[in-house]
Image (cartoon, rainbow, N blue to C red; front, side):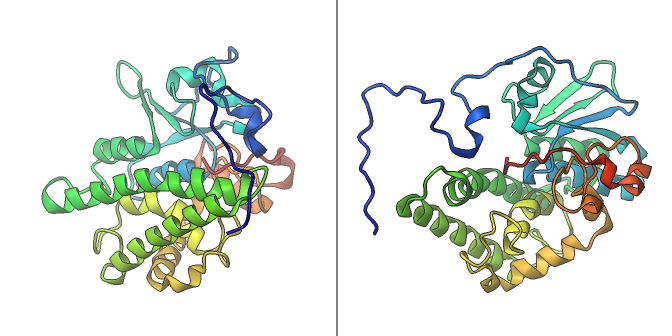
Length: 295
């Protein structure tokens, strides 16, 4: 192991605002709004406030899949929340999600608007609202929810752990990178063993469990997350790769991953989505400064 300056924690921790790496300007140890800014509201009942990080992609994929099934009530407006600019700390967004993390959904279809935050909760809410992509009872429902919550519990090790220390930390140290790389490879092995005997995570049916896991681990397996494919030897996980490719080929997935995306090829970006026809108007003149994080 390489030598590193040993750190002795102080008796009482204090916040060093300059010691946060790439995202120091948006990380802080307190919650709440930093400025007044109302959220825009479009014409559809479902209003999504998000960015096309893996957690945001889960929800836009779900909405596009629902629309593909013919659920017209799933029409939605997707508003861009640029986390690099601190949009998540505006008063309107904090009212929608007191945790100030994307995505947040507000459902205006009833007499009283319903807010839903945390990507897994949004997936479950939409699945139950429209009766799709979530088994209704028994072992199948338990299996689906188990994999959904597996993802919610596992992804912080991938994003906030491995991704931070490997890609974003102001300095790289062997111990945290090795510690989290080991855990991420263990998680990939968990998935690979499950997918060895199943077409999708819970069996033959595509569910919200797949929609939750794919933007994180599917992207990782395809070398699209943290540029870490070679480092993690993702080619070893053949069943994950097969599953990732099958999901990526779905038209609704291809649409969903474009929504609220502000980086990459112009044809892969749709900064805001207010109508299905918006997918036909991704042009160079709609580009904005990149905003990217693995939230």
